[in-house]
Length: 360
Image (tube, rainbow, N blue to C red; front, top):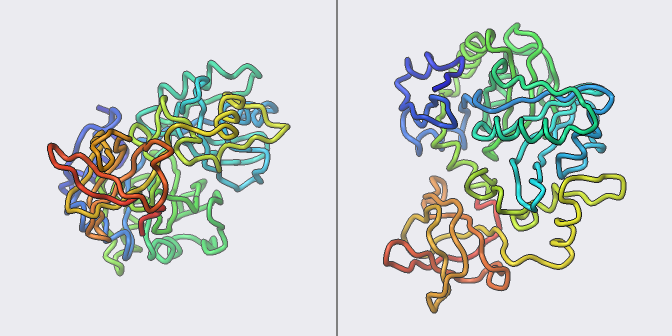
């Protein structure tokens, strides 16, 4: 198993370590519910160094990004970040990713840990315009500092006015006297905060400084378990659960990152435009449990007559709502907001309601 630059720190903190996407990663430290509420109410720190980072450089950088991603990168200014996906040539999704416009003719693509090799191969295969590609995944460490006290914590460590970095924007500067840190106003929790990208050799120093700065807020390390419950309360998709090579961005409710402008030609443009124009057979919906029970991935979704109308893609007990919540693909004609559906939990049929996300 690969290890991140923070591996020894996780073990000192007695984290429960698991294999995830080929890395030894912390799933929890003090308990998922406790860590979840720490992020919602104060500030927590996630090691997300297992994520992948690809540089795209040169005069053909933009044309490459425009071809392989669904969103319109031509709209970005230097310092902007954008959520997007790689369509897979068959109407599905290779991966979802963040696109950073780092400087003129230079972009950073941040991809999911479980898909680094697949994504890299996809990018290389589709680089017909000769953009300069570099897989820097093994050289970069990443921390997500999330929660309402994240800004106050990090502001102690930099002269940059963090309140002036808009959502989905970034600045490259110094944190804790470490230079060239990408300070990005992004996150996967819906609780506010920043994601920091740094060289591996600086990682431990930055971690130590953040925990000293956040001591007054009882700052805590947060594992992948709470990362999942936090993103699910916001209705954010997880690759491998809610989106994959068999689901389209239109079905997944990601039409907003799929741009059909005249001057943007991208992989699957025609397939996805047809779906948008003609309609789709299934769509990703959020639901809240009305009966007691926790929905889990792959549980069948049925109607009142026990006909299968879909399948759960993600589910959990919401620590904030103290209620079962989930997402799943449902036949379009039965996916209306407010509709009652049933989740098959073993031999029981538990009532749920289709609701708009986020859940909180």
